[in-house]
Image (cartoon, rainbow, N blue to C red):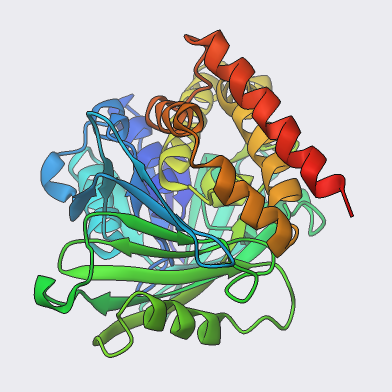
Length: 392
């Protein structure tokens, strides 16, 4: 087989991989992007507005904007959390991801629709990638590999061993045709269901995207019927009789791996590195940040030959977002454990301080420290709710 040569090969063309490929090409490197055709990741599609600015994304890619979230407790209590002066953007992955790949191609990336098969190390320190495209096996040689091929990353498995795998929940959703306003469906808010019958350890969502709506569930509990739970969500939100456009499922990792590189010439990004936020399941923004950092570390590696540059992707990510991930992980581990705790969690969310700090942290992608008194009030209210839970 005739082999092509590239400075970098990116496996996986989602938000992380397409971002990494685009930025490496912009830095002057020859890049091959291998993306598996015909697959759309199940995703609610929520993004903060800052993503548009941080990654130069046109506002026209938004399928919709929502002004807040309605959260529903196990007993059916509804709490509206409005966003003051901003919004949550909604994107359709079947449109958003292809746009990112097209932008990468416009920057000089060679985009190949194919399936990754194998990673082989050569005697000169380079890597040979084997992939299939249109029924033919092809090879490509490179100095750098970026593995952005999802939670079950084969690049990670072959380069770093099968045990390098983050904990995850399995997500399933259905994209349905949004009904007209005459039906009473509220398309102005996201709906989040914290109910054990929907998910015993995560949550269910109804996210409007304009003409379509994503209805889905996540859970790590084996045997939990995600399809049935999604049906319950559709009934509860008035979407049971709407046209189903497509159905998708995939694992969502909920903890960044302790190491994203192999110490030689492979670095991970996106779901392959485990960068989906615990508790919220938010992944698009964090995937693109990881892709950008993988590109920066990869470019430094290509310039210097030092594999230490690859480790900067994770260290920079954790320095910026690690504390948020830790707090969200603790929150999920405590508040999502039972319907009794979920009921208390929803009650906490009625508090104006909680709502304001939650949205400020989400929109800014960092813990907000500008109002220490608000943080103190929230802290003591959390303690009060936890104390009530401790009473038999």
